[in-house]
Length: 350
Image 1 (cartoon, rainbow, N blue to C red):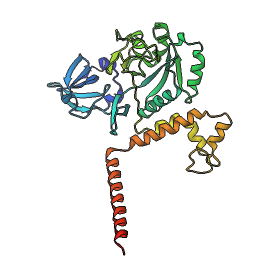
Image 2 (image 1 turned 120 degrees about the horizontal axis):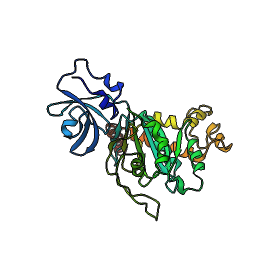
Image 3 (image 1 turned 180 degrees about the vertical axis):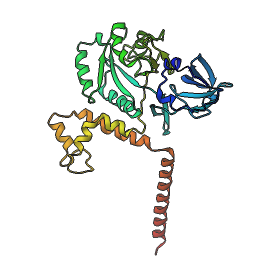
Image 4 (image 1 turned 30 degrees about the vertical axis):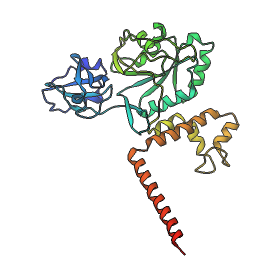
């Protein structure tokens, strides 16, 4: 079956996906992209437009995320195959259970949105950076509400220092002229995503970029935090030729297993650690610690080290599977039983 790749390109189709299609592709199949996921229903976007499919049909070839490409049966729109993902963004699901939650697939660039007010937080940006780099995407930090900040340039400089070569843009999300600085990442075949806390201006920015009429919310005056206006992830075509995914504001972003992403974000600390006297240096008062020496010399911020250690411990904890935790509990249970048996034997001895 001859596909209309030109129309598919308008929603993010690339040679990477085309190469996965078999030469003897069945005539009765079509390609579509997951544009939204609403519980029991998935919205798909294809050459002929958008259409709904029951989640069971869409996930017959595996769990899907917004941005996935599916090869479907033209008859009943059952997924025959989920194409290999170029990138995958996910986090640890909320709650005690160690389970990944898919956020988006096949995203080229992530706009990490943070506002130049009480929301500005370098440690939070580092968290988003680790997630984006682990996913294999290109991160770009977008600082909104620059018009309300006395020194947005200073915040930009601080942010640029978080990672070598990090691109940072400052803008007023309401101004079309400001939003145009993001156009280079939003051309034909490109998919971008907006990630950030509630109230930082993601929906306002999406509207300014040409998405349409997404709901926007006000900021609470008592703490500067925003209210959720976007309630689900969805893809939108941009006038620049690319596709944008809008996301609900994220209040809890627990890192999954993302050791490589953290090592990339905190490459300076990783490199310093190679000069520590001991291989297992904790960087907390150990003799010959090159990391602490850098802090004392003013070459490294203590905040950055503290956040690195916090995120490293978090991802290690969350990378442990449920099966591993159960096995650990069983081993601990057997250990306690052996201790109790030993104690009982001692009591029985004359």
